[in-house]
Amino acid sequence: MVLQSLWTLIVRNSSVLQSPVFPVFFSLGVYLTLCLPFLLLDLLAPRWALVRKYKLQPHSSISWVSVRTCLVQTFYNHVVFIFPLTVLNWYLRPIDLPTEAPSLPCVVLQVLACLLLFDFQSFTWHLLHHRVPWLYRNFHKMHHNFTSTSALTTEYSGVWETLSLGVFAAANTALLGCHPLTELIFFVFNMWLSVEDHCGYDLPWATHRIVPLGLYGGAPHHSLHHLKSSCNFAPYFTHMDRLAGTLQTKE
Image 1 (cartoon, rainbow, N blue to C red):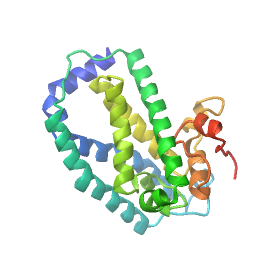
Image 2 (cartoon, rainbow, N blue to C red):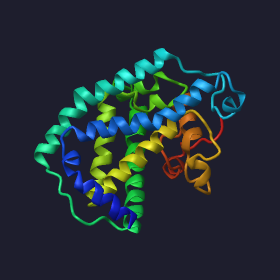
Image 3 (cartoon, rainbow, N blue to C red):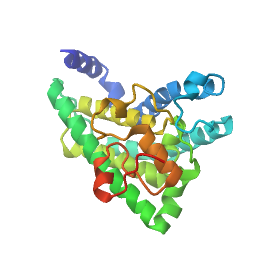
Image 4 (cartoon, rainbow, N blue to C red):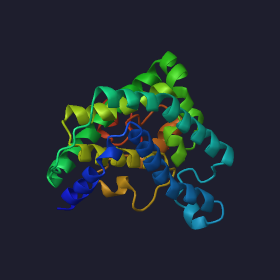
């Protein structure tokens, strides 16, 4: 009933969802909203030992220069590259909005399936771009300019990397035939996990503490990757790194 009420509300405002500018505003709006709590922690960390206690790299700090650099790159990628592609997609693939919402079990299963697919695709892409020097130098090196991660470094990357990961996410929902509401939920959840991965904090309520048996790496997993660049290539789960022998859990 909750999903149906939410979907009915969205359908009533279908002109917004079907607008060619919606994907860009949605992506930027959700991303910056998810970054805000961690930016607040970054402001408090130098003055508050309790916050500093949870930093993965306690001696690191962000500067307004790095914040501006990350924001400029994020807006540049969205305006110059992502926006024209979303307009093209809007023209070639009109959005069909069914009247009924998906069931909750269907949403949960499809979102999990999309995450697992995205994790596999990102792991393969990521490992390849580290093992082939030309790919790393030309396409992925920018993302590693920051050895200490913070929320806004999540989307600090070149256009090739940004578009590649965006295509993976979009292709997975299409491949699984997801309902438009499931797509929206997946994109928000996927973005949250990605921001949390880069946040630079090991918080008591973090996702990797909720998922049992070490199946999920989270921020500590990805912070080690930025420090060493030779381990932990999967964005979320740990099984691909275990299989490839690239998992590392301690410095």
